[in-house]
Length: 121
Length: 272
Image (cartoon, rainbow over all chains, first blue to last red; front, side, top):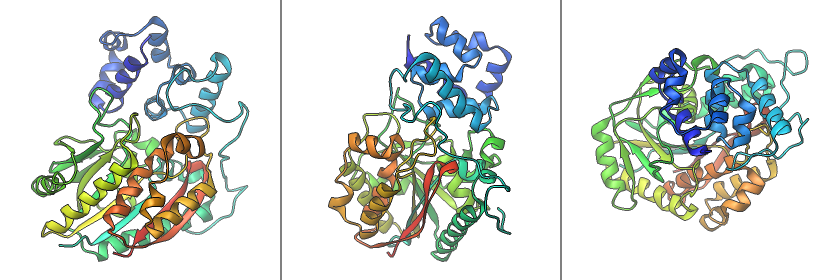
């Protein structure tokens, strides 16, 4: 129902280690403080990154939430693509998808497919 | 004392978090440009670095969103992100509350700003600091321009804000450096991450180097969104630095697309 409430919850979670500990210990009770639909609650608990993206969660907020769940970068991108394929275009907000469902926008360079240098950081 | 340094750089989280997934040669050239920027800043002997950033919901949300905000604390914490994911350990970053207060008071003579005695840094500030003050031994004055939650302040206001920052720096006895950080064209944190409009970026940085006010302000958010993505809204930070540079012209030290980092990775500075 309320994209604002979903994002407000994630904002509070992303910026606070104590909130993250609380969410890990008792996720249902923390979500009860926010005006969320059953669909939104389920998406947050699972977490269903694809559905949250489809609902219009700002990508910066969603990216931090995915990192909190240790979702690897390419997996994060794929989950969003899968969400669009399953649910349709992003419902609202400016963080939409403009490329094709099977696009590979940012290929990963590995030692076998890239140039090398001696430097490291 | 007149402003001692003005430059800009990228801040995308992949720069540190996905460093092993980029073309190493290009990546290392980019890191070398960051090292050059660090040495230039160190040579300017700043008492504080004003970092004009575009944060990503680490402090400000749509319940109370300032267009322009400045930190006023002795210490800041960051990153808020998972340290392993970002590739940067949790840090306590030094600030200077008393200096911030005087700086803010001067900025307020020309621009309305919010101030914040609490501020958590996300990748938008931590990635630049990782390269520019790796020992976290220089006082930071964090500045934020809302580039995330529309409505956003018009570019003319970002320019005016940059002028106010310059006037404030010049009015204080301390040596102040200004670093702007943001992306140019990019579609960050979406499935489109890695999409980059290279021509648009080069055109923007050409305007930036010429410090052509009219050309820099000749954008609107609809066209920026269409051609440069939602990440393109962050040009506000670069434009504020242009205004702070007071008519100086600039040099691009590095401008190359690194898709796995999601942006045209950029390091540039003004000859102030």
